[in-house]
Image (tube, rainbow, N blue to C red):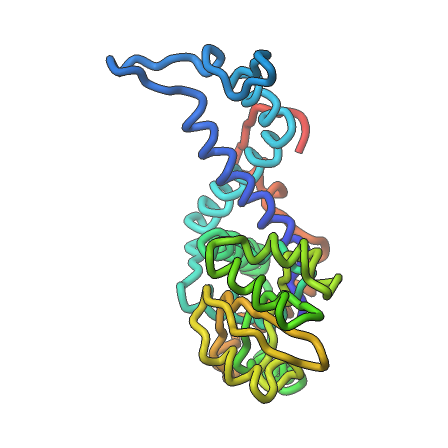
Length: 300
């Protein structure tokens, strides 16, 4: 089971929306001591050898480059919330927790878009679940089909203990110790991994190697004991494996889960129902139904 690319792309948009909205709210207006707003264009965002770039120019460029997709994402959030209210559809915290656990259990180094704030991930997954529920609200799936799918795909719902890790690999124990000391002193683990790690595939990802299941090659022997003892956000001591020296950063732990048919019946129903939908649906397909008007009228 792989996470849909629509979820990953959506995560980028929602993260961009959060960042851009923060900037818009902060930079569009600023208040002086009397409480009166000053136009952003009267202030300087940067200065290069005496030549200034105004905040107004900066904000204009951001709107031109990212404004359409950010606004689309904000509209889609409202669209899904209104459709959910219209059809009395809800996504519970329990459903969200299960879906996110299943997503994380198949996370790998190429799913970099999942390396975002948990609140952003939860909101994007909530929207995806609402969309699936709206699209499939009238689709009936016999219980026998749900039971058969569960029996044939039980491995998807049996999740071992997993550790979300980043690594820095060095050919020298001395160098690895120096790197570990620098990280402990406040240097960025991600930056150090990109610059110094001997493992090229993970180095370009800032050292991230995704969720590693207990019992894997990395989590064996001394490394298993060391990593299992870590708290999220902490780094390991230098560990020697196969003639190289590793430093691990633990981002997150997933406890082992065994979901019963009852636990995931709804998730399986949505999956099978989505396969019966004639075309791939997205929030924009409901814009006309909700009479959406926006700044970029005439194009989705």
